[in-house]
Amino acid sequence: MAAARGCPPAGCGDRALAELLLEFSRAQYRAKDGGGAAAAKVDRIERRCLELFGRDYRYSVISNAHGEVCAHYPRHIVLLERDACAGRDPFESTVQVGKLQDLINRSKMARCRGRFVCPVILYKGKHICRSATLAGWGELYGRTGYNYIFSGGSDDAWADAEDISEEDSALRNADSQLFDKVRGHDIKLLRYLSVRYICDLMVENKKVKFGLNVTSSEKVDKAQRYADFTLLSIPYPGCEFFKDYKDRDYTAEGLIFNWKQDYVDAPLSIPVSLTQSLNIDWSEYQSWDLVQQTQNYLKLLISIINSDDDSGLLVHCISGWDRTPLFISLLRLSLWADGLIHASLEPSEILYLTVAYDWFLFGHMLVDRLSKGEEIFFFCFNFLKHITSEEFSAVKSQRRKSLPPGFTLEEICMLKQRDRGSTTSLSSDFSLGMESSPGAAGSFTYEAVELMPAGAQAQAAWRKSCASSPQAVLWSRAQQSEDRLPSSGMVEVKSSSSSSSTHSDNFLRIGSSPLEVPRSRLVSASDRESRLEEVRSSFLASYSRTIGLKAVPPSPSGAIGGLLEQFVRGVGLRGSSTL
Image (cartoon, rainbow, N blue to C red; front, side, top):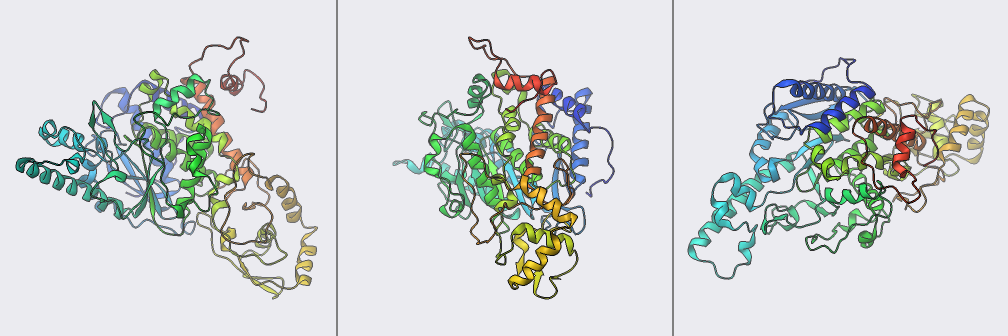
């Protein structure tokens, strides 16, 4: 289905977000629930999401009107196909919606709660997907008949038995065939979406309830069905841990997960080839607090999707509705802040889209989580303050080709601004070859620059000609704010390519406002920070007016908690100050 191009006025701004949060906090979304006022509200939310997707993408829709595909996925599951603006993004998905729907119907039993592998972000032609983990024996038998009662719930435990009767052996063979079939369809779906990387956020190898293995995961599939994929075990605390976050006055700094708990048996495991460029000591992961752990995992995901291959990414936890939307939402917002996806959306619009689609319509149980104080949803958007620097930018992590001696990257940007449409400059002393940036028409990135350097006289002449121009003045002002160092204590992601530039790796937008939301250009570090801060501020204001934070016991001094103080400022009751 082609995207509608009209933009209805309803749903824009703080009021729409407030209405969404109120609906989210009152009832659990289920696709199969129809009729009544609640259904009408959900229908408006979904129509708004489709309109926001349609601003930048051509898309098709997989119908899930009554939950027949998945009871807690959107009723309109969006398949992004390509950028809607011709010439802005050369990348296009090769996935056909008809074949995708057929593979989904065949594969959905392979994963917990039927939450199949679903593409949700399109970046450089790659599908970033989400799902639940693999279903275990218990869930499959629960769906397919009473064999579950006789299985003992032992997920692949048959292989460990020493004495197996002839009758049990026949049952085992039948069970193996069932897994070969359903997981085989799951693998076909992953391959059709060109997914190569699978990031598993579970802290356990298999989810155990009442002594039974009710779910499994790719990393412990004893038949090695997923051996052709690049599997990453990146254990991340479940939603229960975020009660500690709430109880510590919504402070994530210094909050460290207890990795010695009995059920925690999944170690961190990442192929060395994916860690070399990040300069992170992964052996220390159990000593990281919640901030550092989330930051480092996000850096890893951004590095993966920026790799040179055309492979997609799957992120999942157990059910796929707590930790999974946390990282999907952070990825969407981070890429948007860089101007790489959803380029035409304003901060209020991208916030609405990710809350509605990534969290609400994909079944996050906010009502239950709030009742238990497990505020992972709130943590996600408050965490944006920790990823504003350029070290989290997908633009910065792209590789640079060599620059000519004596010229900085910013000066090449100036040259591009002066000589649009020309492939030569400085008379004929050197040539400038450029290719369009993914996601930006009429702009370019440092990755696309190749120069044949001229002599020092030509360089000096060019600089002199630019010294008094208005563009040079603007560039000089922009440089002061953009040449910023990474946050204290954070490791800068290094590029494997050489460069003579000593300035920041930002795309220069001549004459732009720091708060301008660009439609088709990459953004500077200062723009990234302002955009993410605006999203966070909008969320905090709406959240405080609708859901609010549960107060923690006051300190002996009677001082209000740091985040509650922030909320007071957010709604205009107190002047702002540096947090």
